[in-house]
Length: 168
Image (cartoon, rainbow, N blue to C red; front, side, top):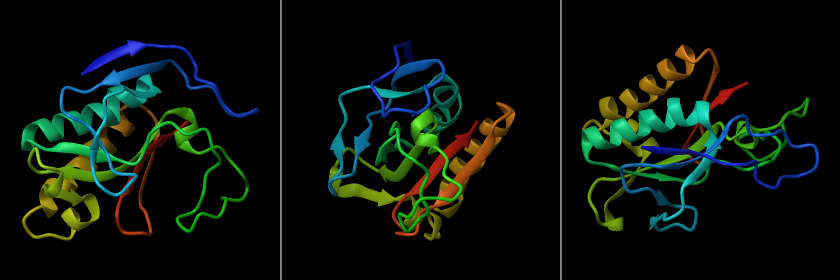
């Protein structure tokens, strides 16, 4: 994984800075699934170095072990924290995404073909993939805890992705 220091991106007024911002290029192909069909991402992932060193490193190692290609719905997004149904959390706080410290992890491609996409929730419910998917979550929890951060891993209500983040 290539991690390069960068500068703070433009953000909403009052949004937090990303502490020690970096651009990350993983050694595995990365895909974005926000438009439905997995599309290979060519640009690096912008995030906090601590997030790169923990969660992104866990994802890359796990994908390399199983020859997966990670698929996500986004990392950095300077917005307020929301509940699964989209309503703002009260009292209001910034999302971990605003700190560059969360990913909405959608799942993986099990081959080079975008037709071979499997979302993380289906993996957790599949007898053939359950232990493998749980391994990723367990590894992320250990890495986040070892970094002295609070774990925030949430199965999003849509049943199609997992929010993996770390609280300040």
